[in-house]
Amino acid sequence: YSIYIVFGVLIVAWLVLRYTTFGRHVYAVGGNPEAARRAGINVTLIRICVFGLGSMLAGLGGILVVSRTTSAPTAVDPRLLLLAIAVAVIGGVSLFGGRGSVWGVVLGVLIIGCLENGLTLFASASAAFEQMLEGAVLMAAVVLDALTRRRNAVSGR
Image (cartoon, rainbow, N blue to C red):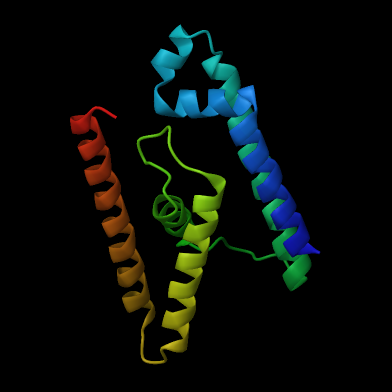
């Protein structure tokens, strides 16, 4: 049932971010908190809600992992933060805020998943090589995001 739960959460998140006032406020606060505050948006409440939703989804993810593996890991994977940032950036979420979509993040998950799966199948690849390649992909995505943002700023978009 976990695939149904994940797709259900994705669809609900997409609908909320795309078609509700709360979703527009989240993008506004992410893009420029001061401008959002001046526009009358309660920035503190939006941040608390977003962090609360993120914590709730992390808990749901933990429950899904435990239900799948029937055991709880004693330690968190140290690469998890790098992978989360890589997935978001590759999926089109700007590190500077205010841009991104749920389906872009799904695409980022698929790209990183394929990269990790391919490196795992590549028998002679060491763990250090895997981490270096993932880091290089992340750096390329960040540089591309920064260049795109700079080009849009110059063109006035």
